[in-house]
Image 1: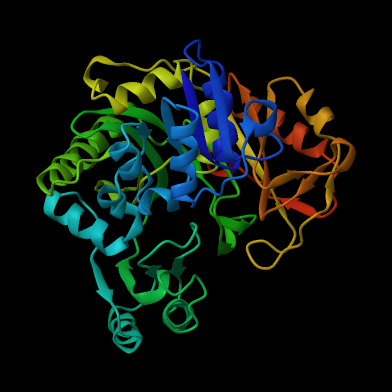
Image 2 (image 1 turned 90 degrees about the horizontal axis):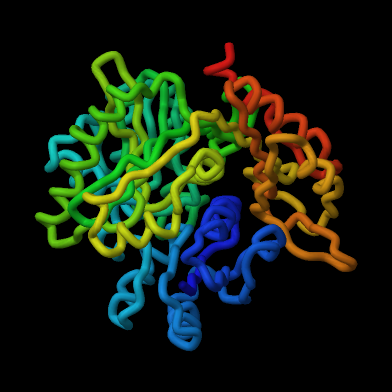
Length: 424
């Protein structure tokens, strides 16, 4: 089977690694890929957002399945274009991907489906949003309504911080014009946050596992939000009973509501949950695998990923199951200094061979590119995801950090406390 993987981050490297192990796979391309993915797939210079270019390539190469990693091409309609061309695509339609593309739409769907979540309001007037913030008080959550690469959420501890977030999003448009056209202001939920994933075929859903992400850039969960500085799986707080409750109260009602809206969701539904004293409550939906959560999940998956994705595309999830390792996994993200603000590109990363030689460790490339004489260069904000596995979370932690320490990259940094909530 010939597969085109769309994207070039750490999530896509983990997916490429898992897909490459499938006996069904005969050819794997990645667009655009990165220096690590190039060891597993043929990389082609097509941007992930270039829907027409991707479709032309898939037609020309008679691709059997397109697997979409990032959210932007889904919201731009890549799955719809593939469907119109008769090409299987793992990922939701543009209409279904609005669950990620608009925070307000996601809340409307959740409310209609009876999914438990916070109180919320949408505003397209910054003055009205600031007035609401002052009325409600802090802590409070301010979100860009549109796509913001995982950085459009501010958990404000004070009213002035929340007002500043409204100004940044709506007036300064720090996340772009489309993302900042409106904000959603929400009640601040309290508890353990968990990323839960379910494979969906439009009607049926299959639990895909859970992880706990570390969004803040600084140790001790301080500083601004990022796309994610590390993750581990499984999170001890997310029991089997809570998983079943999340499927029954969040995932299945949401799928039913999307069918009712004539926009069935096919792909992976990323459910951000807060484990509160009254049970799991919805923080947000995403329409794709998380990053770096995907790396942590793929390190534990024992089933054939390609076969599972095909079952989701073909409406066969009701007859499918997944096998998982009993191992724990932990991923440390190494980012360029300055991230999530301005950062430099082009620095050389050394020691990747030493990191790869650490037992139970694996390095996933995110923002990397190829340099002269086989050098690996930094080419993004989050540059590497260094994973470890073990029979305990401590073993996974130690393997990941031993491998991370073996990498020679003075221009990078990483948090040294990934997994601290579960290891304390």
